[in-house]
Image 1 (tube, one colour):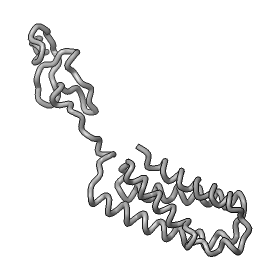
Image 2 (cartoon, helix red, strand yellow):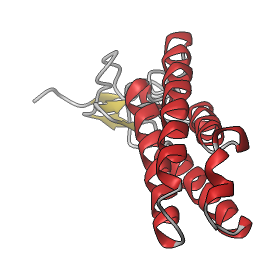
Image 3 (tube, rainbow, N blue to C red):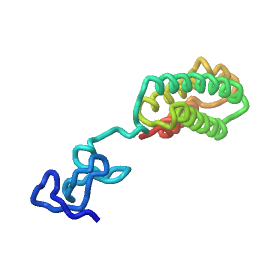
Length: 163
């Protein structure tokens, strides 16, 4: 084991700890926990985790996935809503929100954050927009249940990508 040396920032404190990145000796006050070991104050500067990073390529993939999932969701909602009523419509909307949230998440390599949540929310609104629901006149779902279902789908999709 290495002999104790003085902390880089506190010359009066002996320590046997070293930064895993730069190798400077650090005392207990100066040490910072890091996902890959201990770091000194300088090396442990706040770095955004890769899970929450946002790039143009991720934005393009996320928006593309949101549009495709929104359009496919609209097709499914139009085809299936005439057959469903009440609880089953509500369950379909929850499933739609889950699929959209998961699909956008997978398209952006499991990244999370506010921008991706807005993409998923846009996909839910596209899938459930009044223009994509011409079958509403053919079955009796109250407008309250419709709004509740859309809200549930949006909430599920939103929370699938929550930071």
